[in-house]
Length: 411
Image 1 (cartoon, rainbow, N blue to C red):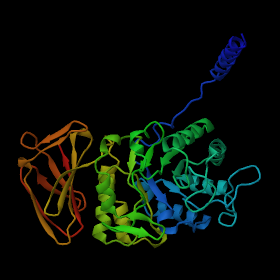
Image 2 (spheres, helix red, strand yellow):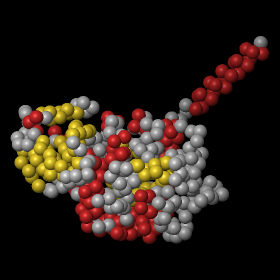
Image 3 (cartoon, helix red, strand yellow):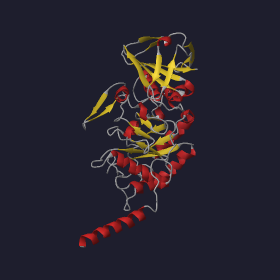
Image 4 (cartoon, rainbow, N blue to C red):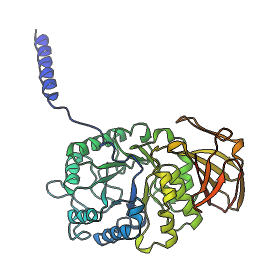
C-alpha cells in the first residue's frame, strides 16, 4: 500500500512539474542570418595579447575607416582576452578594467558604433579565460545580459579551463543565453576543433574555429614551453582541408585570425590572404594598423580577392591537384563562375601550364561542375587585376616560392 501511494505521489509531482515547465517555451539556438558571408574585421590578440586599452581601440577604429578597410568590408573590432578585471564584482558581474578603459566600456562601444563599425568582446567557456581572467562557466545567462546591455555585436568564446564539461553542451548553453538576452550577437565558437564543432555547431554558432592558434609562418609548428603548439598557415589548411561540406552561409569554418603584416614575406602574406579567402574563412585582421605598410594594406583591401571570400554562394574551396610543389585549389562561385588558385609550396620558382581543355572540375560535395570542353570562360588574374584571355587556351605563368596566382573564371 505504501508503495502504491509513493508511486502515485511521484506521478502527481511529475505531472505538475511537467505542466508548469511547459507553460513557457524558451527560444533556443543562435541568432540566424547575422553572418551570411564570412565576418570581416580586426581582433587584438595576435599582436597585442592582453596589452589592450581604449586608445588602441579608438585609433584602430579611426584607421579602419580612414584607410579604406571599412569600405573594403572590415566592420568588426573585437577585443580579445584581458579586457576585464581579475575578479568579478560582489554581485558576480564582469568588470571592464578601469585602468585600460577609463571612459568605460559602454562609451568605447558607442565610439566604435559612431564610426559605422561593430564591436565584439571575448570570454571563455571555462572557469577562467586562457589568460587567467574570469571565465563564464556558471554565469552564462548573467554574462549574456551584460553583453546585451553593452550593445555588443560579436562574442568570441574560448575553451580554456573547461575540465569536466562537454563542448557541445557548453556552447549550446551560451548560445541559448545570448538568445534569451535578446540582443542579436554573432557567436564565434573558439573550441580549437578538438571536439569537431563542425559536426554540431550550425544551430549553435555562426562560426567555429577548426584548429589551435595560428602563428605567423608559412608552414611550421611553433612549440610553446607550456607543451602546446601554434600552427603555420599551411599547417592549418592541411589538417582541415576535408571538412568543407560543413561550411556555408551563417555557419563558417574559421581558420583563425589573419597574420598578414606580422612578419611573413609579401608573397606569403598574399598566399595566406588568398587561401583564407578561397576557404571562405572569416577575414579577421590581427596586425597593428598604426604600423601597417602600404603593401600590407594592399593585400588586406584587395577587393577582387575579398569578393572571392564574400561570394554569396558561400562554398569553401577544395584542392583539385598537387604536383611538383604546385597545388591547384578551386572554388565554385555564384552565377556559375569559378575561382582557381595556383599555390607554390616549394622553395623555388615554378612554371605552370594549365590546359583547361584537359580538365573537368567536379565538386562532389556541392554538385558543381566546370567542363572546359563544353564551356568557355573569360579569365582574370586577380592579383595583377588583368584580363588574360579565355579557357580556350592554356594558362601559363611563373610563380615564386610560397606565392600564388589567382584566376577568376567568368561565363
